[in-house]
Length: 311
Image (tube, rainbow, N blue to C red; front, side, top):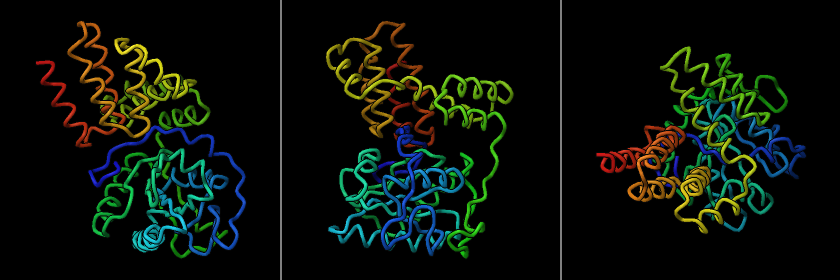
């Protein structure tokens, strides 16, 4: 998904783990993320967002950042709520008051309200900023459900459930054992163990595209682990000819949703490199294509550009 209405792929790599284990106080006068009068519509903030992340493991969550001063954002929440209800429990809406949730605004890289970001299996997937007509949102929801099915987030919430009822809880579709092993490793920050699990899954079934995509994302997360944004960007700016520094900042760009920037950086660098450097860039691009999703049109454009440079 993108900030436009392009077809959606995977699977942002923004780290929301700092928000995942917060206590969940209910909001004054509103439904908290842990429940409410409508099981399909919840309100969330910095403290309660961990519950939303958990729910996104079984159903895609449409997160709308809104603010009271922005009438268009309030109107968009109402429209998206209606469209979510029409999906019969296969989607959840989380409304986030941006003025009360500064850490979420930063984590989801929102530049304005309204901003709409989906969550699939704990990963943010940007949809759009501003408003969109219902028919465009419906198309995005169709693609979001397909993406959820690819990543095991294809459960269902009982639309007739009430807060606190077991029927209002999503029913999880179990992951294959090795995928579950990888997911558990990711949850505890052990990316090496997750990589091993995905490689084993690929060895057992070379056609397991979810394992291929999972491995690419885990490797990206592992490369970024323990590094700060400023550290990566300063290294790249001070050494424009340093291949490792440029690869790292491309990882950072892609993890932050700046997909075109990441691809352009590496493709522009490619002609200046020796054969070993070109091989490294090609390998990294192929991996990043998997992270974004090979069906994404930006990947198709970058593939063609890479092919033209290779041949």
